[in-house]
Length: 240
Ligand SMILES: Nc1ncnc2c1ncn2[C@@H]1O[C@H](COP(=O)(O)OP(=O)(O)OP(=O)(O)O)[C@@H](O)[C@H]1O
Image (tube, rainbow, N blue to C red):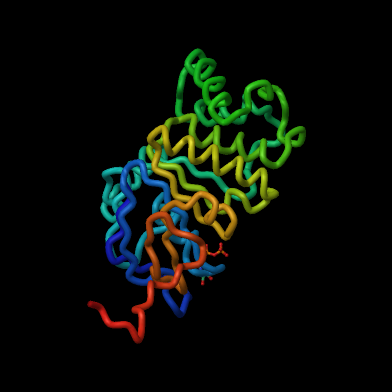
């Protein structure tokens, strides 16, 4: 679903590349945590996936499209296949929960009667039924993040990208939000979560893709935040 082949990204004016020769393959239905210290290249990877920026070298395939050759006029269709969630929720403050989610469908040109069917379904999926008439300032942080997830998912994208989705939330609320992402993943959506949150990575034990200074240093199934040391050869013992 998402393939990077020997991808290098150099920003104009940057002396070192933000990403260096990175190759990964995230399959349909995968759930991956993308980790690494600040500045290691996580946001750069997410922005490459949505074609907000382009690679300097290497190839990127997302949902069957080669982003190197994708014409600009096809970028909106690519982005319809990708939902994105951020740390700071980015909700429309003067709109209700319902309107925030409905707006994402209006801009896609979906008819009002379809929107009326789709919005309650998605609000139920993320556990927000009953709060449709509230505005963002009348919600907790966790509820606001659920609205952001609903807005990202209402167009039924194949991929959901989350950039530090629990960064503003307390531990219990963070767990609840990752449970929502996990549920969405189990229903078939490919999920990539860039995070510094050690606790959720260790709690959910998913695939861990780790960057350091723009280089891929680990890609491990059922990983923890800190790489476990490789088993050591037992010294001083002979094998019969
Ligand atoms: N628009 C830009 N122009 C120049 N350099 C940039 C730009 N965006 C990011 N960088 C640099 O690229 C490197 C990777 O940054 P990136 O934002 O991808 O890291 P990150 O892992 O997401 O960090 P954080 O966890 O702090 O969000 C950093 O050295 C950063 O300074």
